[in-house]
Length: 313
Length: 313
Image: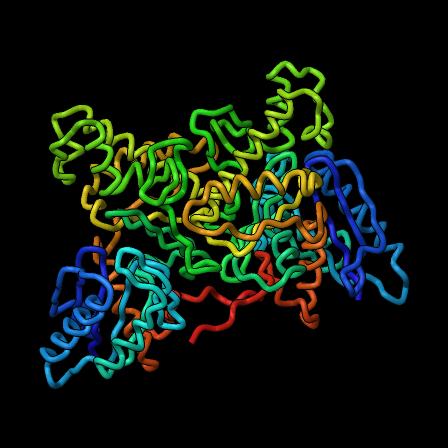
């Protein structure tokens, strides 16, 4: 049985027709516009994929993930500044246009659930999406946590350098101002590196100032992970998002910094995301399957629940 | 139906005989020694209270809370440095000596469950115990979280001032080095305040250097709470432990600092613990009742679970 998955990113809409084994067979994408245009583009992308599905296995449900503050139970995006959305009933709008049940939730939170399902069973895990900004999916006791107002996981706005560089959010010294695609570009420009290098090659750039800015960012990330470890004691921290493409070049110094900062406990396992930058899209597929009560993945609920912890006595 | 509750603190053992309404009628305490002596003293305190109970309502179970790394399901203290314990089967030892079922768990985690039960239902809450050190009970999705290795809630060892003062734990710039009874005393002594003032009057001390050290500590606490808010989005942060006795003198500047640091979201509610410095003892009583399957509090499991969240569809 197939489903449709959609990841609404800040720059790109990514959609896929996904078969029973959660492989993505058929894909489609479009640049992200703003406001109602995004809804129209999303519906068109999904309808296009639906119409290309084999007649013997038409998609039965849709899963949609997006950044912003999302109320998964209500199917509503409360607020997504960069999309120009406020209190948008996105699930209902897409369900009406496609004639299929639509599940909606937060991209990183659901990406965390997808990673939890892909890895070994880990009741306590942190999924960190490193991209234009930085967000985290917090898994405690086997559940992806949304927080009281749907705003949990804002790892990028933990303050790791009090009085440090100004963040786009208005705070000073946020992790995101020191280590994110946007933050690194801004710091490079401020250091007079008018020709900001391709971020993919930044760690190996011949200019030592540029490399030092990257290395400083890695230390800031290590401190944020230190503090998250103290509070949550995750078994595992998983890195996804575009910047996780640095792979071992990032993991090696990050592991060293994290271990060096911890005086009395061992660090959690640090690994790259199983789904790479596509954790959100895989999470959307899980959400879609959750709309179908008769599938074994129905336990993946709104809110990104992937596994219920064993009942306590 | 009555139960026995015991809170094993770093300086004092506190025990109580608690009746059905979770009031503590009969109390007993002793200084905390080390190693096997603590077990002997604990058994003696509890036996003394048991023998004083009215013959019509003898205690039916025991709940014990302690600092350190605690495996509640196994009834074992894995490690408690200041008590000299490692892999101690404390629940079994006390059950044998008292002839009653014994529940064991971590003091702050269970204190958080007691606060959760005392307040309005709040699925996402942080309970912060401010005493000799600083610990937190993390409630997410209605459950007190222990983390992967039973080490969640180490708010006191989040680094809030990179390169800052040395903490007793070996790290630099921990919250606990800046704002805890031990940390404040050390900073006052280092500032040449050989006559360290009574901490109760520190905020109003005539010496401006002493007051500045206190105010600096409050800012460090606000930053730790900022970072915990970003990660967990709690509806409510509740302050307990001895230092919460400062009451509004502490809450007022702390609320102001927390609100000033948050650029784009409102702060969580900040309040004093319902049980004051006795949250741990109340949590121990809940644990004891959990040993008795036929009470309405049986849902308060090992691990400090206080309420299960509603099942998701």
